[in-house]
Length: 158
Image (cartoon, rainbow, N blue to C red; front, side, top):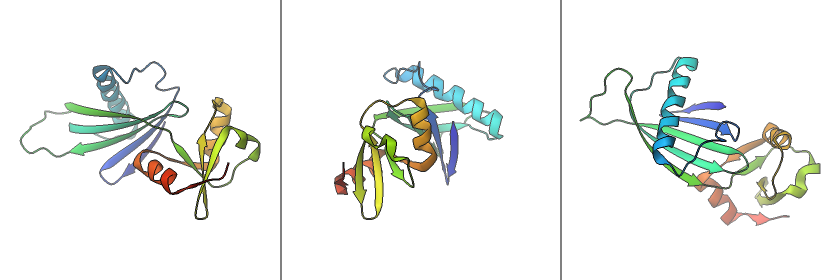
């Protein structure tokens, strides 16, 4: 798990091991899981969560899920202590990986896109956890609308 704070948003990167048993089509189970995850984060990172949150989940079968957590400021609702309400939105996505430097022996498992001077990889075949680890060491994950925009603009190299 990787956690990044970006202004009012918290971004969590959870690999597929964290979410193996989670069924994202079951909204209630997903919301319960996210509440438990927020409690774990609050204990580990000394953060407090209370109020209403919009949680956007970008699910990729190869990587896992990227979770964007955004607190909504609702004036008319009062929350006691650490009471949390969550609204989850799930998007099934194919992530891109912005390339910095990479071992070329794995290129045959990826589609390679080029935009200006940057290369982006999209997983074309199933890869092992070790291969995913090698990929993540040298790449930045691009997901959601940004990934869609890159694919529209990009030239497919291989």
